[in-house]
Image (cartoon, rainbow, N blue to C red; front, side, top):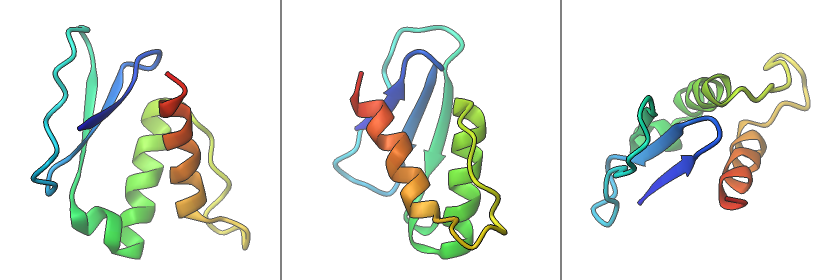
Length: 85
């Protein structure tokens, strides 16, 4: 399973999930971001992943130096936005 944000033409693929299939959309110009288990389980890699995904989607995130910054919350917000489609 890949997540897809059609308005931004961005797809997210999970590489380490044997049940997951790659993005198969027909849209031209789709940016495919790939994530591994390490990207999702290591705190610093996850923060980098969330920042990269947010930048590609055009979402603004709070400053990482802000004491209220939570990469998990930011990622969930982006996932919820994908589910709306």
